[in-house]
Amino acid sequence: MDIVNQTRAAKLILQLLTPGKTTEPVIPYSPQKPDFPSVASGALLPRATPESRGISSKHISDFLIELASDPTLNMHGITVAKDGAVISEADFGLWRSDIWHTTFSLCKSITSLAVGMLIDDGKLSLDDRVVDLLSAPPLIRLAKGGLTVRHLLTMSGGSMFNEAGSVTDVNWLKGFLESLPRFEAGREFEYNSMNTYVLSCIVREVSGTGLNDFLTERLWKPLGIELHGWEKSPTGIEKGGWGLYLLREDIVKIGMLVASGGVWNGQRLISEEYLAEATRMHMKAPEGFGGYDYGYQIWVGKSTPSFLFNGMFGQNLLCFTESGVILATNAGNSELFQQSSYFRIAEKYFGKGFSAAAPLPEDASALRTLRRTEREMYPDRREKRYGVFSRRRAESDLRRMSGRSWTVTSENRHSFGVLPLALQAFRNGYSDGISGITFGVTGTRVDIGFVGANGVQTLRVGTEKAEYSVLEDAGEKYIIGCFGRFGRNEDGVEVLTVETAFCETASGRVMKFFFHPGGRMTVKVTETPGTSCMISALGQLGDMVPMRRLFAAASDIADPEYIAWKLGSVIDPVLVCEENLNKPTKIATEAN
Image (cartoon, rainbow, N blue to C red; front, side, top):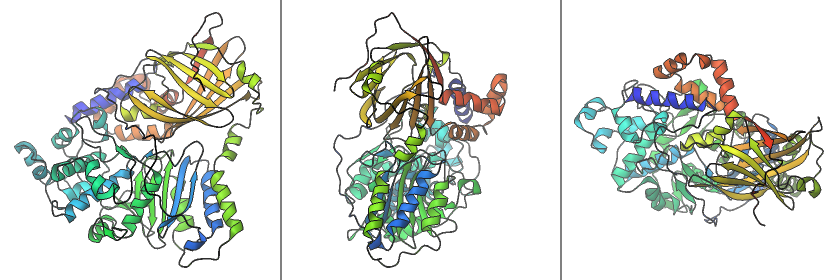
């Protein structure tokens, strides 16, 4: 089973590295992402000034500005809270705090809370054997008899069946239980999201209901969290270790609950004893993971008293236990764990030596500056990004684009999709490619249509302010924000630059449409998070023997530097197009 799945993963990656062909998933694709409800609701946290919580507004302003000015970070939003109230919140770029955001592995810590609640109920214990809880057959009981709930919580399960199995096998639980061990359970730390998935299976088995339904009564409702959606595995079980969508404010509530020892509005939701154990170090994590060790699916600060719910690309709930400061972030950083400069900056402002013991005098001027800083977190960076253009926005410039269409002639048209490649990979569903691009203009809005085998997908691009719409792709709906600027570059070539945020996800794109003389158009695409993260993920899979053998067999991609270049050309492609000068084309323009 392990060899089969590893070989399948290797072949899938080889497909991704071949842009001239459509990528075919190993297991059947089915829609997984939940639709965002049309109306945001739920109980809001109190608001307060930073000074009332012992922190100067200038201190928060400086923190936000440093985050925004760091060129290695791609922040989507941050909320700062202390003593039961939000004291600062800022959205970056096109992302919005009123739209839920995927949490990635941040939700592993929430799965841990569900396990703790069942332990509090006396229905589960840390030393329960997994084979007993899941009624495993005799051979598996013999092979996995020493695996306990504690091992799953501490990422020391030792199974070879890992994240790659989510795109190569339909029955993840069976794959995990039948997998060969990499080491004896409990012996060492090895991060593996399938440990958390098995915890989700255990919650379902022990409680009699799925993880999300269990938490609805025990966590979501008591905290006033109404917007939540959790993706499921092919067998209908919540993924546990990823796939949860929450509002950032609701993530702060969960941080407040844990920081308070499990009590919310006078009601105990989880025992103080479990939280104390969950937020202390049980396994030492290698230095490459960052400045945190591991508790029960919760990261624990090595040098500063703190605990962390961490999801890749910068989805974080970071609580400094001495000062009580809580930071919740969404981002699209190029990081898998805690390697980004965000943690250094957060530590600088709120870590060792920081004190907020008593209220400070209110400072109206500093507070006004903070609120202005919160509102303007991204525009200055956007101006720098578009600084090479003349910044002409006249409608006459835009109208000249209306009704024009292009045929995509480059080979990579077969693999290019409107969704970024990272999103396609996460859902294990890949684009069928595009054949053409059309433009329509309504006022100051540009509608860009991407023509594929199944019709036209349209991006609504605002040139005065961002346009938000819903993009449907293969049965899933994505809220997207698009902002564009039309002008000329330093060589006099007309360029339409479009920034797109897939607001519920960590993915974003910048597309630059260059209109060359003679009817030729090139489109340069830059995706975030980008190539470096995908290479890191490949590096983890590259330890597999079948992966190395397949790469060695394909001599043209055996060199690691060539693999990196090849992957970059797929993630950030350049499309070549020829204008349809004499062909009438149906333009993908939506009415106001």
